[in-house]
View (spheres, rainbow, N blue to C red):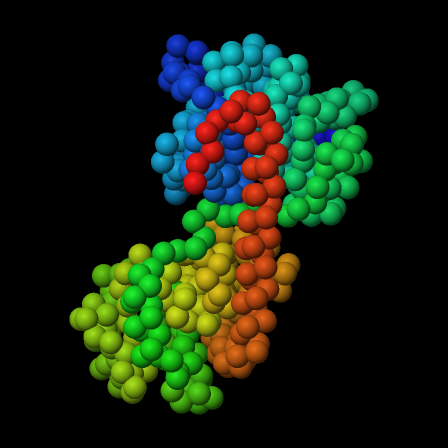
Length: 406
């Protein structure tokens, strides 16, 4: 069974593992090692790390994508970091001797035979999360009969992304009792915060009006959003558009431009509020995304129609009950868009006309509710997967002794 040629973010031959004296000291208490193979599992592993830190008081070590310097990678506060050990017995033993993890979580189906053999020898609790089909790390493929079966036998539990991946693991030789087709883990920081008093106040102002939100809209998509809004007004004359430009500094000039074009505008940057005749409410603070997702039953996510790709995670509005419209370019959110698309939980638009028609369709509350409910299902299923992985990890003796918090 060969390695998938497109997997992995960096060539292993170009990295050198740290020696033990270059590593920071291992903290006292329980420690979980999370190895992040690629971008599809990064956010879920971040959420898992945050839960372990906050609820279990465990230390968390992360390797993989994070040490490759991927764009926009942010570690949860308090997480330890190291380079992934090279795939040879000596490097793996030195790494494990230093960190002495109580449990190990790998991701996406990557098989490192030397690492798995050493974990098995030490009888470590070993989990595979967000598992696609099992595949050997590039350069470590083996055509020896039974090599895959022996390698994966070290896993205590595999949480597969779907039924097909679960079958692949069982076919590769892992006992059925150690494979669950659960779906992907919960993404990190999905439920964006907001001030509840502010939400209640604005909700009262908008209570009788249909509302939609244009989130992080680049200049190249402003005309498309306005055209869709004009179409929506023909169907619901009191429709309110809340729009957050990609560049918050553009909010003031955007409000001025729209007012000059004859739109009835309120500008949050000018401390204005949407009144009964306001057609467009221009907002300017990305930190308030959680507020607008809560207030708008429909959200169009900017960047995917004429930009370079989505500028914000589609699972954030999904977690807050807002139905999702998006362009065909997912940017860095292809895995999330794929999950929502498979569940028919978001609507893709490829043109201004598509956006206008989709918005018109979603002015019907029952259609909006179906889309939002399907998206919420994707998010809540991920939360159950993360809970299952945590329950498995807590069976490790070193973590069972760790004080549980909250």
